[in-house]
Length: 271
Image (cartoon, rainbow, N blue to C red; front, side, top):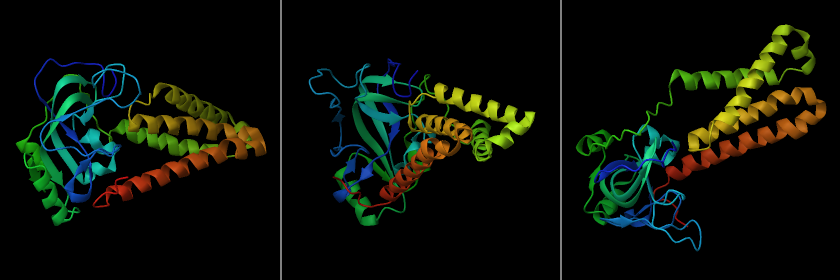
C-alpha cells in the first residue's frame, strides 16, 4: 500500500497532522503551493493535469489535502520542526501507510515553535480564529488526539535497521575508494565487494520512491552501486561514475540545507 493511497476508511472526520509555511500576516501556505488555507473548511481541487475532470482526491491521481498519521511521519520536512497543525479531514478520504489524502480539511490546533516571532503568532491566531494556538506541541496533541487508522504503519527512523543501513553505506564508500588491484588481491576483498554490490543493487530496486525517506534511500543505494563499480573502470570510473555521484550528493546536501534555512525563515518567502 502506498503512503497516502490505497485505503478508503468508512468513518467520519479524521484527525491528522500537516505542516505549513507561515507566511506574511500569519497565513498558512502549503509547502508546495502559493494559496493560503482559510479559517474553517477548505476544499481540495485537483490542479495536476489540465483537462482532467475529477474531484480530489482521486485514486489515480496525487491530488487532495495531504496529512500525516503521526509526528514521526512529518519528519521528512524540516518545516514540521517549527509549524505543525492538527487538521480535521473529511469527505472523500484515501488513506495509506503514513497518512491520508482528503477532500476537505479544517485546522483545529496550530503549534508554533518558540522560534516563531510573537507578533507573527498573534497574526496567525487572529487569522485562524476557529483553531486553537499552541506553543507546546505535546499539549496540542493531548487536546486533539490523532485518529489511529488500521492502515497506518509505525514510522521509526532511528530503528536498528536504519542504523545498519547507514553503517553499511559507510563501509561500502570506504571499500569503493580502494584500488581494484587491492579488491582482487584476496578472497575476502572480492567477497566483501560482491556482497555489498549485491545488497545495494537489491536495495535500489526494492526501495520505491513513495515518500521522501524512501526516495533518499533509493538514491543512496544506486549511488553506492556506481561508487563500487568505479574502481574497475580506471580513469573513466572517476569521470563517469564517481563524479556524478559526488555531484548528486552535493546537490542533495545543498537542497537539504536550503530547505532547513527556508523552514527557519519567518515569515516565509511566498512566490
